[in-house]
Image (cartoon, rainbow, N blue to C red; front, side, top):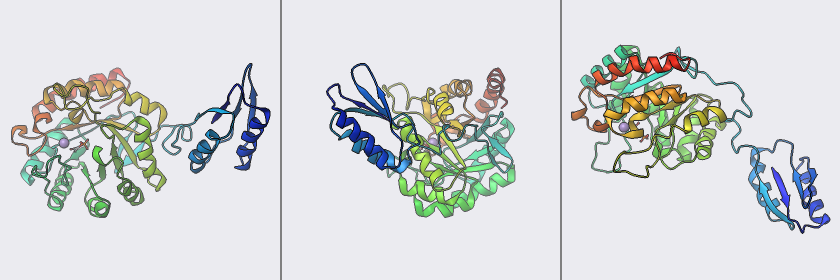
Length: 342
Ligand code: PEP
Ligand code: MN
């Protein structure tokens, strides 16, 4: 943190800033300039002191401006964890050289549908089978998911085809239930700042994929991840799934591929990209999947349905098994071009 004094600040104002910092047990560094003085805090500021100290210093007389230098999250940041986190779940490694593919329908609809999806996902080389059982739907009249029955289907089909499973959990009290069926909990975009849910998912210690909210800044996203880490869950995947678009007439969301290298730079956590929700149009999903890999994503989540036209949710953005199959060699070629495998 740096405190910049105003040009007219008196020497006693500077002294007051320095003693306020020292009273918190921190060191203060006086930095005289040509026309004004700045006071730096070179020591690490405990996260819980960050805001109170900022408020306090901003209000002192003679202070023109207070600026943060370090990031507001500690556990999610590379400042405190320099090397990449490689998250290994039942032998599948996220964040290593290999790019992981998560594939499957938006929603679990039936055992037959999931078996067909799993067969195609496995044939394409995916390592994780997705399928929502508790669905966050904009309309209360839209398909809400098969709930526990859907989780049972996902679990048994995942086991049958040797695929890890992921499904969304929307409420804190259902964390134990969803955890008992799936390998990875998904926290959806709409729930990125559902803090009671983040706390419960954190305490569970179960792998979690956290999706970025459609209007969330990178700092808000990483602070949401910080909740999981702070509650002792180190098994966290970040997922960029698109932000609100400037122009909805062309695409459902804007897949923010800028966020991929930015997240990789400031955080050590693996980053998954979701081009299906990111663009929302199945014919353009392959291009955005390739771009995700080129941008440095550690994994790609693809909605794929055995028969997208009959899908109960997100059919318009779901690949057919054939489209997924056709994408894979191209995706592997891009992965190779950026020094990865897929
Ligand atoms: C989903 O993965 O089907 C989903 C609902 O995603 P999001 O939370 O990103 O909208
Ligand atoms: Mn979906």
